Image (cartoon, rainbow, N blue to C red; front, side):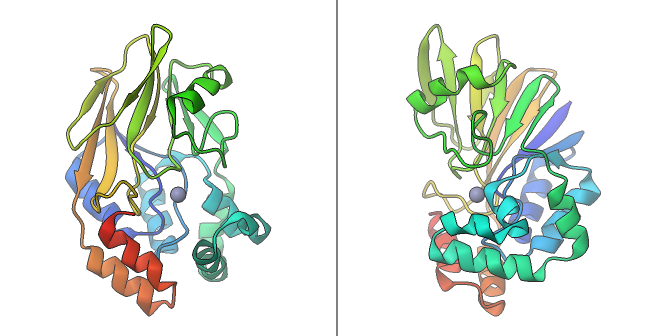
Length: 240
Ligand code: ZN
């Protein structure tokens, strides 16, 4: 099976469409949460994922869109955007978000947004953070998002390796335990403005990262037109 692994789409429809087109035909779409928040197209993105039959997990922005008290933890722009999101999404979008589980085990792989021990909120950014989470999932491999930075951590004979992929990098998934992040479709933060995603090939047991250029100006114009904070448009151009 060829599976598209998407995270942190953040209501950026042009980025999602570009990624889907670039990845080509897939047998399934998995998402790692933060489908909404920051961006201007929450209903459109949820609708697109629903029609694709995407399965996935809830992110902190998805949770906050349903319960604004959780947005207390957000910075000012993120909070303004999630308040706008909560005020605009349709009942169907709300219902789809409410059904997302915190974690999911599928095809022998664990999916979470943040980390297995704190699925919605913890950021895994370092080898020690990855190591501290090894005991919190039972499968060999785990997919996570939340940091908006593509990468992986691999437990190689007791040493936790940090893997920093570029466009086209492939990681062979063997018996060694791996925590892998496809990066963010809708708001990359690693200094590369292109959308980031991955393909999991269960036949060859490989994960391949892809970077995809998309019409950033189209998303920026919609952010401004909908009165969302200007910084949320500006940051897309720098990938930060
Ligand atoms: Zn996010």
